[in-house]
Image (cartoon, rainbow, N blue to C red; front, side, top):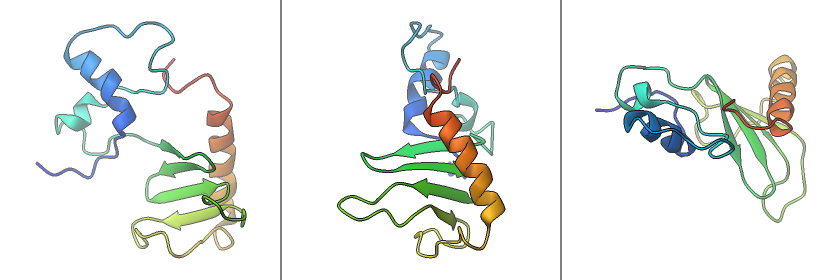
Length: 121
């Protein structure tokens, strides 16, 4: 089965815990969300958003959009980046200057998530 549902490998923990009817100890897997329905083909959309991180960058994926802050490894920070993954899956055309409203909204959400205690409450 092939699915376009957005899922993350970090969600394996919460999803498999649900599948195996196991509790996750408090404080563990705080960013893991239960996406079992997407893995089972019952949810065709999956996550409404997803965070991606490297040592130097943070990114937020939401729908077709990906917003990135921070410098690429061993490069100078050139400012925020915004990509439409539907039309630009290789992330070649930064649209942050053309879609400032989307970039600002995603920047706010990303910073709130970075400073939170985790996605799974």
